[in-house]
Each structure stands twice: as structure tokens, then as C-alpha cells.
Image 1 (cartoon, helix red, strand yellow):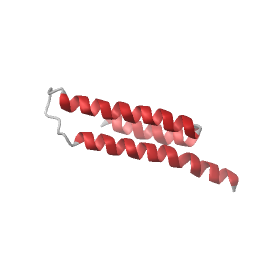
Image 2: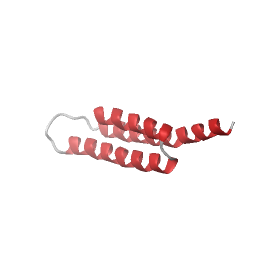
Image 3: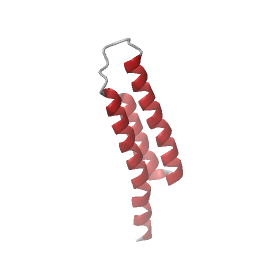
Length: 81
């Protein structure tokens, strides 16, 4: 869960202060790492990780990309007004 939270916090921070291209690129890399980590946790067999946490990781990565995509647009619209 800390990876999911870190990815979402990173998306919000980059969405607010970084250019859109940078925000999307870094967030995509963080989301891919998060999904990989959860897939690895399920497939390594060293614990009782449920399969559905992979879906949770994918959903959080999608949400993080949506946030990183939307925040720069909102910031730009506020500057134009």
C-alpha cells in the first residue's frame, strides 16, 4: 500500500508543479513500477497475497495518470483567466 500512496502523492505533486509531459512520464514510470511490484508479490509465492491486489495496483496507476493529466490543465486554465 505505501507504493500506491507514494505514486498518487507523486502524481499530485508533479501535476501541480511540473510540466505536463514530465508529470505524465514520471507518473507512468512510478505506476508501472507499482504494478510490477504487486505482480511480483503475488507470483513469488512468499506469502498469502491475494490476486486482486494486482487489480488494485492497476486501478491506482490509472487514477494517478488521470490526476497527473488533469492537474496541469486545471493549473493552465486558472492562469489564463
